[in-house]
Length: 285
Image (cartoon, rainbow, N blue to C red; front, side, top):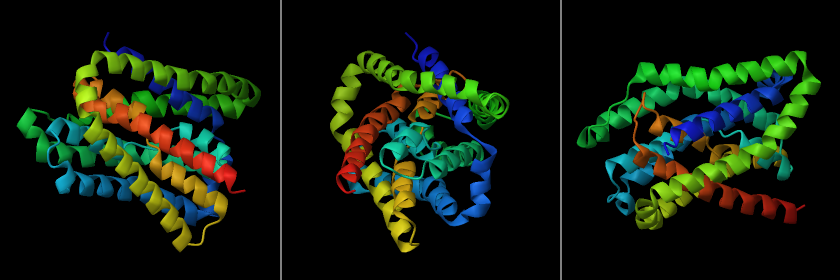
């Protein structure tokens, strides 16, 4: 089974669901509280890829294949995941800030992701004959992200009660769908995942811990509130793994499921680490 036929509807539903919870007031937050929004976007768009590349250049990861390097950077360049809104709510964070950061990063990375990944593939992709068709990537991201987000936003704007009902259904479907994707992907690439899980699992865990720690540090340095700090920790640490998998597996882009393996492992470690963080926040009322 080609995983692209599973991940495509999952990503579309996630982006549609994000649009369903977006309100015009969420964008007003940029003007009303620019500091946490700006810090969060700097952490996601700039800091995260820099930390990922620093980890890749370290002696610890010198053995990683070019395909895994591309996969790691693809995750680091992806926007925030829509599940971060749920995690922010569970951690008693700033849900409005979380939604704003997820929406803004989804738009900004339409342009930053192709630029960074074009540089990454030109640096390491030649060794494995991997090239990035930037035009096709832009078109695919617009179709799979901008369009469903816009439709969800319009539904919420004119039919807020219907949007709320649909959102309540989709938020229950999202996690089981992602678990199904990970399970199918695992059985298709069991040998590779098991063989590389030690190094890749540790690499992705270091990436998540480093970026979440930087998020907490920036929030402390700029004296943000506790709710804003918790949201930044989650937003900077939780990327849209579904989008990274879609780009890796898409016949229009990389068409290589091995590149998606870091995103699969990242999704697993991300949920484990951030669930632990949510548990800690609940203990520290």
